Image (cartoon, rainbow, N blue to C red):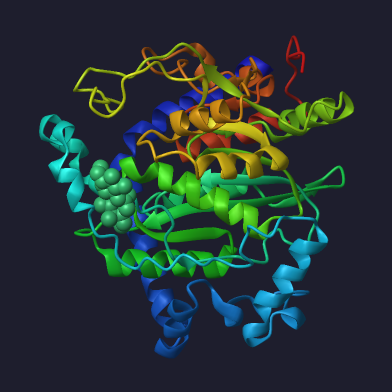
Length: 417
Ligand SMILES: *[C@@H]1O[C@H](CO)[C@@H](O)[C@H](O)[C@H]1NC(C)=O
Ligand SMILES: *[C@@H]1O[C@H](CO)[C@@H](O)[C@H](O)[C@H]1NC(C)=O
């Protein structure tokens, strides 16, 4: 029976390939429908202004959420958060709310006079000229997300505004907010701002509308470009340090991975039992790597920028880190210059802390689909036994999730976690 269900799904996969135009039409309709609804639900201009003023969502924005309303009246919210943090023993170095003020990042002109700059590949000019800007104001914030509640696992997903369908699939599957075995799971998507030239105004409205529905978006006011991915990392680490005293573990991943949430929780459980959870950082670890010097590669790094082997680091597709270590990583990150590849940057932070990330065979964020299609890609038992698998389309993710969670699915062996 397992084989038949696999056949059926594979057929469906293949058939779906041919309905491309229909799918685009549907997406278009969806965008129009959303735009229509935005017009209806559009907050008054005054409200929007207020949100800009406060630099984050503002008290209006979450006053309707239960529990928080009482404590966040007007400007007293700053005080409240500080008290909360003190109670949790978080040190005074941390401000009580998001305090980044840089509205426009102007280039560091003296970089242009550096000898190495003249030889630097132009692709990296913008990066090095703006490298000193680290923290940006927030456009959408959720200070209430995890400050009070005891959140066992915070799912943190890197995304960009345009990938709406990926977020939908992720919300329906592995990062659905819920309580499993008494353990609370919460979810946040990390976004920057639309890159100039695209339909910035409407994209921004769409994302604000999406956040009104789900309340799971963090958005910063920096351009969402590939070289700015590390900004997402450092801004999140700082955000986490301020607002998340109630979290135990973070899973950080891309919006196109498959995560077996049950296995992830089981893995955490064994680590807690073994009392090996404090400095936990586990993923698909890459060791002994050196910077890629092939100019055609997405990950190309010129010698002028970095000329040493990389420290061990986790592939960014997905890794698990304890809250304690995330706070230490924040401290370490502030002592380092921002590096354009975010996975490597975190590896550098770990190295600074003299910690090594841990490799686990359940994390497969590289390789299985990269070169040739593998039969494993459509095999539910493969996913049932792993923790993270890179890369699936939103539709594949939804289908694979339901197959893996089907009680009738019988697999020959279980992975040893
Ligand atoms: C600007 O660049 C110069 C030269 O590289 C550097 O010494 C200086 O620290 C930079 N300024 C900031 C604010 O980062
Ligand atoms: C990163 O974002 C900042 C703020 O929007 C921008 O000034 C800078 O040019 C961006 N850097 C890159 C490399 O895209």
